[in-house]
Length: 563
Image (cartoon, rainbow, N blue to C red; front, side):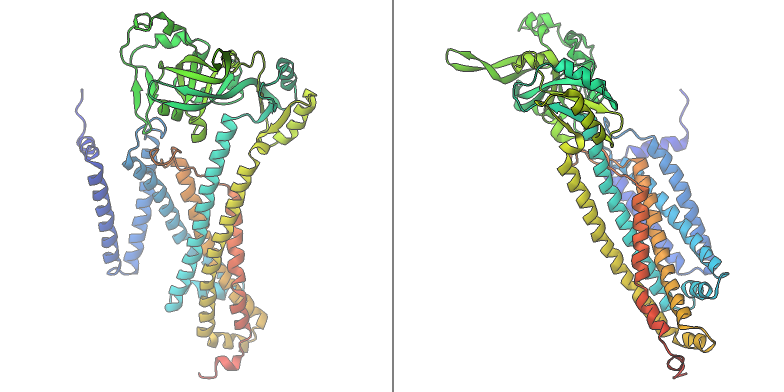
């Protein structure tokens, strides 16, 4: 085997260091670079500072390429151990991309303002006022105004994207793990003639698949714990075309429900469980089923697929035995006796919804009908449609096709109306609250323009003496305020878009011990960003009205009285 190069060996030794040492070393290095930059910045001239900025710009470009490529080669969040420095790589890639965008805007905006200086009189003077470096204190105030608008816009973009990410993630999980249209009855015993109804539903335009479900509540008991379970009996041939639960089975297999004997033939070192931090538990050596003390009856148990949190609560893995207790029992000499039946764990699924993973279990349709004493009845028919967002147009067609008043047809929007209404209301409230931050930042623009009117009173008087109208002066200061607000909005919205898109692309993982989601959900919607940019620009433009009007009312004699 060829010997690794020196840099590779050093890198392996660096990765072997404890995480606290790595974090402390990285923090000390970053702090040292900042101190060095500040020290050198104060001692460099204009040309030296330009070279430093160009060097930092190139460094962020290289950092984005290196860290971005590195983050794509890291293991996926689900099914892998949570490693803290992996998250620093992902966040570092997003931060480098954001700083690169910030540097690009820093170099582009002055050149963009210089283009306006070639335009009309109003644009020329406004651009000169904003980009002038001889105004001293006013230049600092202008930069602070731009920074205030930029930070407020950036915060609004970040919050809206993360809230939208949580909403989109929740919506995706609900649609993937539940029926998009559900046909059910209020009777606890279910409904009959469901095969005819199933055939009719499958012929409805817009419906892609439908499957019967027999469900109810039972009690599950293992050798160490008990838990309440929502049991769902499904048709193993058609359930995968309606919901994505079979595709989310992490260990075991959904097909073991129809072939439980295959569970007994699992080879050694087969994954049978996954811990909360991503650790995988493997099957150890076992005796053949017939050699157990309990006898050959162990081989006859049907299979059951559990949610990941339910499996952890019961402390069971693939191949273990658990007992289900149904309240629909039989009448005995001492009264009603609950019906019990043993099942062998055939698989463990992870849907991403804690309430779902902690309570749901799947068996075959016939097993659920037998355990819940449903006979040949089912409790629901789950339906999947082609156009998810247009499901309300398919629901009446399904209702008309059934022609049964004893069945209720509801779509996912109706079943989750309160949840999504609350999410939408929260998003609107957050947008309005953070828009106030932009309004507060616009006060800086008012102060900046008022100070500029005071300092430039002589220039305003000379302009009016030379023939400039009140309307021209009003337009001049309105344009200056629009430049300040526009530049701040451009910086905030653009860097916010790049930062959130980077987080969405690189996938910053969250600790599963604390949060149930594997990674930070981020959803970047271009319409939201356009709305944020429009609102920020309108708010900052309205803030310029009073200072611009004050400048237009200044009389030439007042401006040059003390000169």
